[in-house]
Image (cartoon, rainbow, N blue to C red; front, side, top):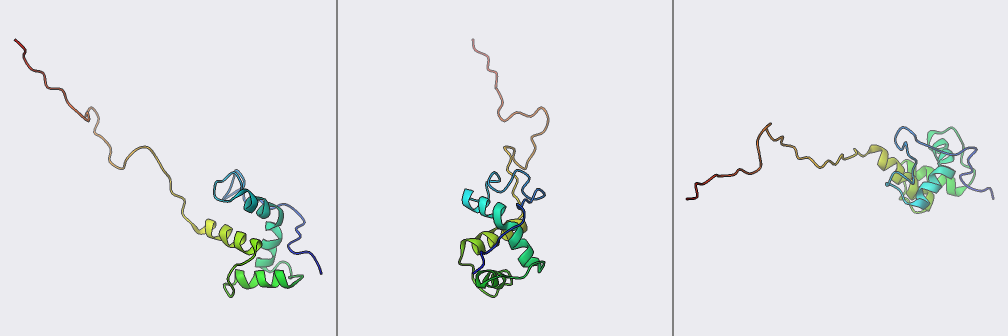
Length: 115
């Protein structure tokens, strides 16, 4: 039986994950390593640029088409990768939505005459 997901090169997605999968904070170390090592083969399978070599890769294609539920680490990681591509990234900032007018303070001082 042939080994599954043998890739001829490493897989990177610099457009969506410029610092790499593991450093993106969106994948575990194991998932990032799996994507990097086998992602090129998984991408070729999904795009039809490569034929499946065994039952595991045939099942992977069923998962890609939505005809089966992801169960293996390869399937779950690829599904997660595809979901992350479709998600909108939230941008967090320390500033609120409202801008404070120039010169306005959050509090004011009241001077009193003390005799």
